[in-house]
Image (cartoon, rainbow, N blue to C red; front, top):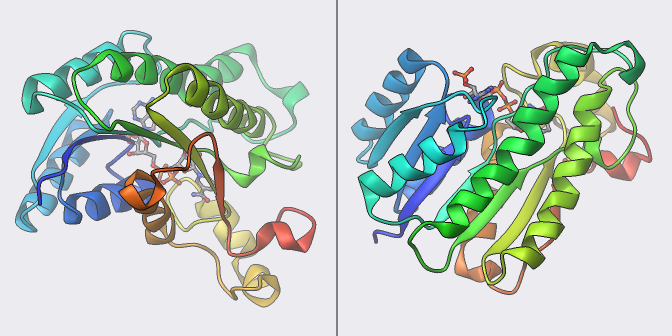
Amino acid sequence: MERGAAIITGATRGIGRAIARRLGADGYTIVAVARREEELTALVDELRGDGIVVHPVVANLRDAQAAATVVDEAVARCGSVRVLVNNAAASPVVGPVASMTPEAMDLIWSVNVRAPALLAGRFAQAPGSEKVIVNIASIGGLEPEPGIGLYNVSKAALVHLTRQLAVELAPIRVNAVSPGLVRTSMSEVLVELLEDRLRRELPTGRIGEPEDVAGAVAFLVSDDARWITGSNLVVDGGTLTLGRLA
Ligand SMILES: NC(=O)c1ccc[n+]([C@@H]2O[C@H](COP(=O)([O-])OP(=O)(O)OC[C@H]3O[C@@H](n4cnc5c(N)ncnc54)[C@H](OP(=O)(O)O)[C@@H]3O)[C@@H](O)[C@H]2O)c1
């Protein structure tokens, strides 16, 4: 069944790639957004090989005009839009907030908070019905965590942006998903450091895989979640039950 166009930012790797595969398999036309054209081309070849309809859009979400480029391109290709998944994020440096440069702070803010807000605004104005937005936040936005600094603050802002938009953009449903540690290129160093311990300590006995998050997104965009908006679904294998982050 053709379900409409799903814009997914950061669709070429990790969690975004798994979301693109899952929503594509569920019948959505995928509008895949990333900066690197060659990775988008590889994704398009892979998904089309599986019978998924997919359109690539090259955009750097650091730029304020990217939101218009992305949504307008989706409408030009698909006629209307149904789903927006704000998944792409920047985590350029590690360290405490106080040691971060203004440039790193601006990058984190523009990609992790401003871009989802601008995309949501443009998406709300675009043609389409039964529209849904999912923002990929993080459990780091729910508890302080040494070493990740302003990235976590941006994720806390994204959770609150989710609630704000659920009110402002109603009847569009707007929800967040907050993953724990998931095996991707962004988390490579943390996985290396923490996987063995988390395997022993987490109630689920393992760290996350991108498909774990994609399943939660598939639920939130579906009609089964028709009475859910402004919520934040934690998908962390039980990390928060430990009473501390990893
Ligand atoms: N992995 C985890 O443990 C974890 C945990 C909690 C939350 N999250 C969140 O989950 C989401 C996905 O993370 P991930 O680990 O899957 O990341 P990832 O493997 O590093 O993939 C990031 C994706 O975003 C794209 N991207 C990055 N910067 C962009 C920009 N400025 N403009 C457009 N596209 C951009 C990348 O493609 P290009 O480089 O080609 O642009 C890539 O497709 C993020 O919001 C992250 O904060 C991840």
